[in-house]
Amino acid sequence: MRKKLLLGNWKMNKTIAEAKEFALASHQIAEYAKKNNILVGVAPTYLSLATVKENSVDMIVAAQNCHFENHGAFTGEVSIPMLKELGIDHVIIGHSERRTYDNETSEKCNKKIHALLENEMVPVYCVGETLEQFEKGLTKEIVGEQVRVGLADLCPKCARRIIIAYEPVWSIGTGKNASTEIAEDICKFIRETVKEMYPGAEEEIMILYGGSVKPENIKGYLHQEDVDGALVGGASLKIDSFTAMVKNLAE
Image 1 (cartoon, rainbow, N blue to C red):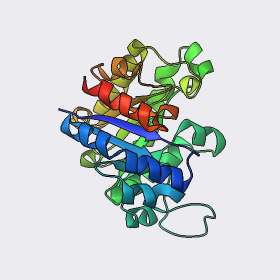
Image 2: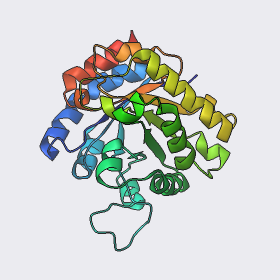
Image 3: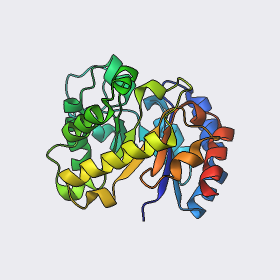
């Protein structure tokens, strides 16, 4: 049986001091989550990764991005070996903001996913459609292509380690969120697509929903059969709302 996962994406928020304060305050809720078979984690900025890792307990600490090369002339980038040295083993790949602002294509994501898996790390691969694509009824076409391209040419055993996050772009940070029915339908579609590519992997792969998730609605999403967790933005920045989401999941 797949566990539930609550992963906070802090984006470009929190100073090192603020990140440390959150990490120290998270001990109790992380222990509570562990007792209730729930995985919890956060993805701070690069500058705060070491601080959160050192001051948290039973918490996944993920990076928000990485480069697919181990070293080289890539100004401003961070490599997988650099992250591994900090004890980081999860990395968010292909978030819609990076697809929009940094030309993060599914082909580039595929290179990063291969590199992460080769280094025995866990990619958290984000997929999702824009509002225009949603309104035109193209969601499954767009998401299906992102999954097939991003997860192309993996070894079947490696594919089981991937986490996929479905985040409709039109719901991220807008206050609008997909209905639980839409979330379940697309997460189920993603699982079926993975099954077509790597039979058997669909039973183990974790699929998250993201997009204006908060304490008031998280339970509805995670009670869906094919939704294994949530990738949360703004609501993960405050320890009170993070705690409330974990407790709502445990009920």
